[in-house]
Image (cartoon, rainbow, N blue to C red; front, side, top):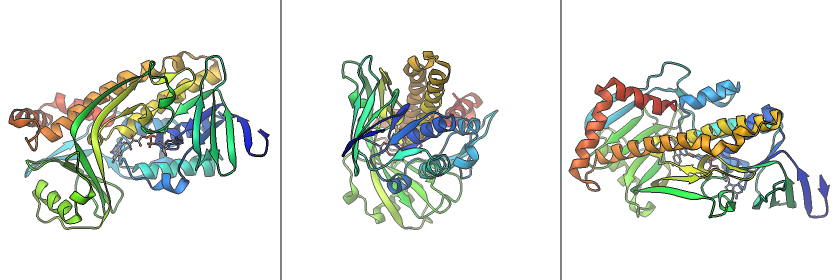
Length: 396
Ligand SMILES: Cc1cc2nc3c(=O)[nH]c(=O)nc-3n(C[C@H](O)[C@H](O)[C@H](O)COP(=O)(O)OP(=O)(O)OC[C@H]3O[C@@H](n4cnc5c(N)ncnc54)[C@H](O)[C@@H]3O)c2cc1C
């Protein structure tokens, strides 16, 4: 490492931008394989460990962690094998079936992050640099790539072989790719979800509630809490949703007057949309996770698609670095994107069904009836049920 007063110049093999689920999983796999890497993250460790988001690691991702010998250390929480699809006052328990491998786990995203950081930093002595600012990517043809960033100790240059953009939808990695290279494909659903973390556990099965008054879901977030999602207007904000209104709507949409108000820890609003950026690589920069694609939370696939990217990318990087075979890396985007489009289709299917089968205000009663027929199919056609299970498990 070269140092002048306020500037350091270092080398590593792989620079990862973002210590979310994709960046930390990749860094852990690389570190376990003996590959040098540095993760730079704009937030502090405490913030990344407490950011509440996803709650289910699907069966495919569980299998990936098992393959790396890390499932026991990283994953916690009960298995996720049922969903209660409620249609107004009727309840239909869907059993997610799979012939091989372990089932999905209710492991919250922040628990996975806490465990990844513990494993990567505290056990493997991995290099994660928090609180960085002004990350800039240099990714010129025929030159070693590098990132520059600043932190409390000054400015830094990190020269590397590959840069991995794991910095989410609002990061810097994707925007370093020229517009002439990148295509954005997107779909807006026209409504939002209010996401509320409450001090009340799921007492039966996780619920996907379809109601004439709008969609509602209740999913576990640890032993004492759950996350409620309520369909709402795109323009809605906190001022429109008092705690009292939230609980009244939950009771109304689940048709259950026995549900009691509980403490609401946080509320935020997520516009429902699907986005894919293509290609997911440019020269020596590779995108993974939300930096490259977004799905609405209705499908519970965002974190799992990020983990899928990392599964493929980690193998491709190891093949290039350890066997000097760059074919998988060169084909990374082409390998990943068919899977991403497949799960975009599932997300659209799931989101449309959940919303159209309920309140007909947006798409009318014809779409309401076809969406209900689609839902009904899951409980009467073993073929439809099996396909749905495969998507839920992440194995399709
Ligand atoms: C309300 C909600 C509910 C969800 N529910 C589910 C669910 O049930 N199931 C599911 O599978 N998915 C779900 N998701 C999606 C899931 O949370 C994301 O897909 C997942 O976080 C993607 O991981 P990532 O590592 O790609 O990005 P992120 O988790 O966004 O991590 C990106 C990291 O990069 C850092 N960063 C950003 N910019 C910079 C920069 N310039 N320099 C350095 N660091 C930077 C960020 O601080 C962050 O730590 C949900 C999302 C939301 C918002």
